[in-house]
Image 1: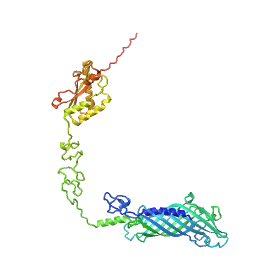
Image 2: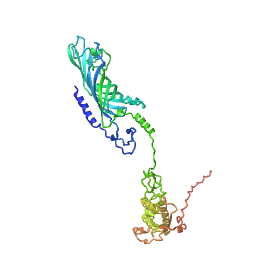
Image 3: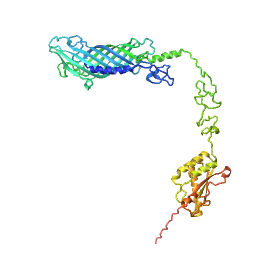
Image 4: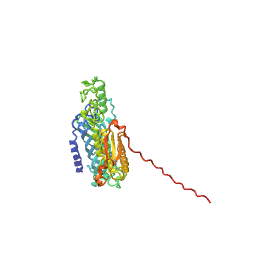
Length: 507
């Protein structure tokens, strides 16, 4: 009966049994792993680093006895007990040394009532019943012995008390027999809401060897169904004998657990505290002479040669934890020899950047300032000139030097006006560069108007564009102080005067 449930349980058992073989841990010495339970072997937390087997298969058989029902197996009317049969198979996975999860399949038959249904009814009032059932459940497994065991208990660890509890689905066929004969009373299919059940109990395990455990279990099964005992529907005469709405039974079994895997011990039989205390005792009684810097420190950099990655560090050089000389700016010149520790530079210049000739720098700055745009008849720089100003500022920062910026205009227009405008525009460029991080002490400005214009006023605007420019010149330090910051005075701000109207005289 319910052959499909047995096939499903077997299908789940085969792949888990195949993958239950654990490989031996391989250490790479990189970092500690608590899964090694104090082992000196250090390895990553992977499936290959396990020290214990954690899969097993359990099988067993026993006797179920209906205890809480209208028709029971224990002294029901005739003072006799009726014994059925049961069997189970489970796949067990240990999560820790004290907890695991089991997938279990149960099959059995209970016998209950006034007489065994194998016999004829003794009289017209006698009622007997039997129930064939199949069940699949998930059980939590708690190893109480590992939870409660004393670490100073040096006795052989061969007995373990386990507790089980879980839920699942149960399918059954309940038969009733009386003087008129036997008939099917109730049938429940699996995997439906009404087929859910619970079971809980305890088991005592004995470790026969590293592969086999012997276990006796006593489980209590709560069906949640008043018709499991074969009494018929809830309103039948038999089901009125008891107010219980759930037919429950005890299931006593004796079974074997077969542990899978390549290791010598199973995780559920391992006591980590016992191992820790044992290893502490060993260390306490062991004399260890620790020799620091066994190979010495040949370069005297403070890092032992055992882990020094640079055994010939120059004397006086600062080193990191691996004994490698520091190179702060990563330019290939160690700090001991680097004249510019924080600025990268070539080896041939002692780690300092090679600066260009200041006159050449002035040419590059002037080239970057070509075609700076201003608002019409004003010294206000237009936004489209920002990229050119950024480039000029970066060139000056990189190479240094003092520079005079000279403003020029074309020959068209009033000469005095052109002179004033050229001075203001040159000063505006200086201010824009200083706003980009250039020191106020390295740039100065002046204007020459149209004095140096070479294109006649009668030429086209496109031709006269060559005279509208800002030139840049490097100034030696000896000459620098004799030049003004700018060659014009800002016009004074005129204060507005508010006119006050006189009060009219009263007549």
